[in-house]
Image (cartoon, rainbow, N blue to C red; front, side):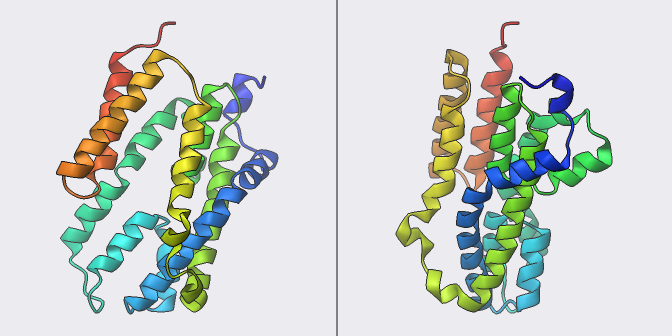
Amino acid sequence: MASDENNYTINKQDVWFGFKTLLPISLFVAVFGGAFGLSATQANVDHITAILMSATVFAGSSQFATLELWKDGHIPIFSLFITVFFINARHILMGASLYPWLKHIPPIKRYTILLVISDANWASSFQAFNQQKPGVGLLFGGGLALWLFWVLGTTLGIYFGYLIHDPYAFGLDMVMACFLFTMVIGGQKNYRTVAIWMTAAITSLIAYLYLPKNSHVVIGALCGGIVGFLWKVKK
């Protein structure tokens, strides 16, 4: 078992390990990057803007939502802000959940790592940290793999997007959900964990059915977090 000190450090070997570990899921991310590239072209977004959006924003759902608001280059800023905030608000909780481990890293390195945080590398690193294993390399290296293939997929989608016009027809939209589910299965197994996940699942489903679009992600995460906060872990 790695020492606690090693869990909070990062080196080239750890980054490369994280990159290779998340490389398979990154290939599927590239497919949806291609779908975004195609959608951006259909929305009359110029190629450079679309690629820069993927490179700097790196948030699939938010980028697709932006295209829905894109009308001949004129975007309602307030609506865009509200939409993107609610879709990505889960990153606030994701960052907070990693703080006990990332607080040992100098601020510049810490926030550089968080630039490429997404669902997949967050779940992988969070599981590793909870198992007292090094997770910083998974977070950063895996994030770099996801980012690289998202940008690459966007670029290919602009020119060859017609080949993946409907990725949902192949069930590719379930790849990320299945990946995250394996992280849950591989985590701690006790009544507290079950209660947290069940609360998050039920409340997010209710929010999905009755509350504004995309709010279910934040609602489920908050409710599950509250249960985890109130149900203390026995030392």
